[in-house]
Image (cartoon, rainbow, N blue to C red; front, top):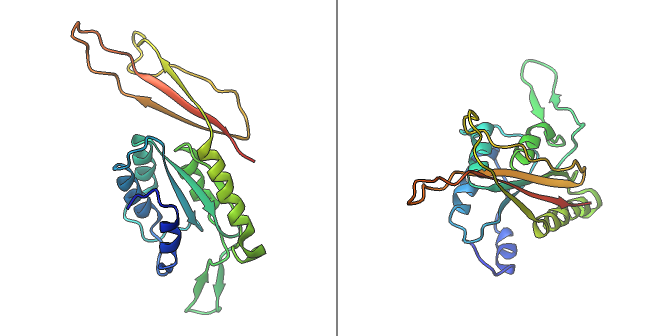
Length: 207
């Protein structure tokens, strides 16, 4: 359960051991539903994975849609080598595939970019005693702890079919930008409906 005791989750993590297959999208969906009960408006998921989903019942499209709908950012730490290939052994009719060194970076990019998060590649944990993993988590901590919100309330244009106005943010390779829209407010007693609001959260700078 949610807690402000920072030591509690650290101690409990030692009780768990990773095993079996990987259901990334199902796990994220469960985390999103859990975050729906959170009291704080800023909500994020930190995903530590090799990116290779093989048993999820849900799809990437569904997961991204739910995260955006509920305003949840996904930050991912990719463990492994993005340039490594799958190794098939032994030669013959009965073979097995070893992906233990590979990072599927391609599958993690939409999860992070489309939800306003970011992807950090940490490499193998055993390298340099996990220093790259620690550095990636520090960057995520910095990104989540700083930033600002720009809100725009725009009148609905005739014939726009509900399309939102274009609000630009100058390109910055070190910026993490999240865009989301709040639905129009209910009509006021006078019958006037408030226009939808487009909000850009960011940029958040990281190393």
